[in-house]
Each structure stands twice: as C-alpha cells, then as structure tokens.
Image 1: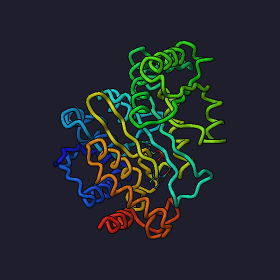
Image 2 (image 1 turned 135 degrees about the horizontal axis):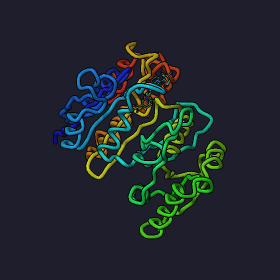
Image 3 (image 1 turned 30 degrees about the horizontal axis):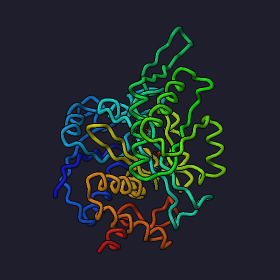
Image 4 (image 1 turned 60 degrees about the vertical axis):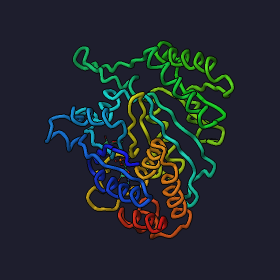
Length: 336
Ligand code: NAI
C-alpha cells in the first residue's frame, strides 16, 4: 500500500536530514508518496507565515507528516512554527521514547524511558504581555479538558505497550492551581482506566535528581508542556544526545513525526548532520502506518551500524567519520 505523507523539510540542516531519511525509508521498502510542504523561517518568505494554512490543511487532509527542525529566533522575531503546528493541529501529545543504544557510550547503559508531554497548554499558551514598563508576564494555562486528554493518552499508551509504571512529574506544591489540576486529572484517569499500572508522582526537581542518579527506576513519564520540553532533552542526553532520539506529536486527527533537535545553524549546509533522529522518527511513523516490517528493517540497520562501532558507519557528532549521506548509504547497504 502506498501512503501519502506530508514532508516538512524545515530550516537549517532540515533539508539535508529529511533527504537522507527519505532514501532510507525507500530502501526499506516503504511505499510513500511524499507531499512537500513548508513551515518555519523558510515559509515566511513564500507565505508570510511560519505555519501557512496550506501546510496545516494538507496535514489535516493526509493525517501524517514527517518534519525536520524549524528555526525560531530567540527573544524577538517570529513565533515558533512548532508551537503553531501543535496548537492548530491539536497535536496535544508529544511522545519521546529514549533507550540506550549499543555502541553509543554514555554514563548509563540501561535507559528505557518514554516521555509523554502535554503539547498545547502550560507556559506555551503564547499569552505574554508587559503589565507596566519593566514588568513582563507569561501565562501558564491548564484546562481540565487538556489535562484529562493527555492523562488518558498517557495511560492508554502505557497499556498498549505493556509498560509497568507511569510517573507524573509536577510542581503542585508551588503551582497549586495549574499543576494541581494536572495531578487531579492524572489520579482520576489512572483510577478509572489503568488501575493495574503502577502510578507514582514526583516533584519535578526531585524527579530530575532521581533521573540522573538511576534512570532504570523509571518507565513512562507523564508531564505538562514546559517540564516535558526540558525532561525529554535531559533523557535524550542520557543515551547519546538529541541526534539519537526520535519524537512524535499526536492528536486525535493527525500525527507529526519529527527530529527532536533544532535546525543546527552552526553546521547547516555542510552535509555533516546526523540524520538518525529523523530516521528513528520515520521508524515510529512507519509503525503508526502499520508498516512494521519496514520499520524493523531500518531499526536493525541502525542498531547494527551503531553497535558495529565502525567510524564510517556513524556521523561526526557521535565519534564517526560519515557525512549525512554516507551514513544513509551505510544503512541502505545493511538493508540490501
Ligand atoms: P540545535 O539542536 O539546533 O543545536 C544544538 C547543538 O547540537 C549544535 O551544536 C548543533 O550543531 C548540534 N546538533 C543538533 N542537531 C544535530 C544533528 N542532527 N547532527 C549533528 N549535530 C547536531 O539547538 P539550538 O542551537 O538551541 O537551536 C537552533 C535553532 O533550532 C533555534 O532556532 C531553535 O528555536 C530551533 N529548534 C527547533 C526545534 C524543532 O524544530 N523541533 C527543536 C529545538 C530547537
């Protein structure tokens, strides 16, 4: 079966890594009709928007997208394409699986964690203003609807994948209203639909300390937007960094699979970026599309390449010598 999949190459290294990912998915036998779309800084010139209606409509229509990173200026300038895509497409759940990979040496060799992050509320409401000169505020929003749907998603995810435990990270001792509502919803949904799964709550600062001391005590992590943003990168760092961790954003209508790192302007255009994050996200996408055999083929290829330890089968950022395309070639050879 041929699948229509939207392709948002994005900014910086985005076009380089998405091109490599397209080649690898094709070599695995995935039949994909790619629909190229625009978002991010590169979309502004053409459409005057970081998340043009044409892009949003196409993703709504085709339901699945693979996305490269998009640039967001710091402090000033245009808003984040990611935040807009997530809010406008109601992609309320971000899923970031993080696992130790043989051949990538880190301080830990036993990490097997999934971070589930609420993706549309919290401090990412985009509601900011200057109350009086010199006093700024950003509003943190939590709604019962938003908290309940991410809790439901999180426990369903844990059940479907036969995970043993869900830990909710929060700061409800200080943010009694917003994080308090988040906790209340998690407790109730857990009791209602997933009482067989072990349930734990940890205050976010203690949780981070526990994570770096012993990640093996964690399984599925569930949290609001801002904590999830930080904790998912922290977890990626435990297994080798942002270059080796995939990500996906789910709503009830569509799903966007994306590289978790940024547009890496410092190395853009040099052909040396590691395409593994978006390739791994492509594997998540193939599983979502029911193409499990293709997904397994790619996973076996990169697991083999990385555990083999040959410098020509890994990119510079993880101690190898391969360029973006050479790494893609190495995976393709392993699938032949
Ligand atoms: P970044 O992830 O782009 O880069 C951080 C460091 O990691 C840089 O040294 C970069 O060269 C390196 N790096 C990142 N991806 C790599 C890859 N695939 N292979 C090899 N090295 C890689 O983060 P930074 O510098 O904070 O942000 C740059 C831009 O990216 C900003 O405009 C930011 O808003 C945007 N960004 C976009 C994201 C997205 O679209 N999902 C996520 C994070 C940042």
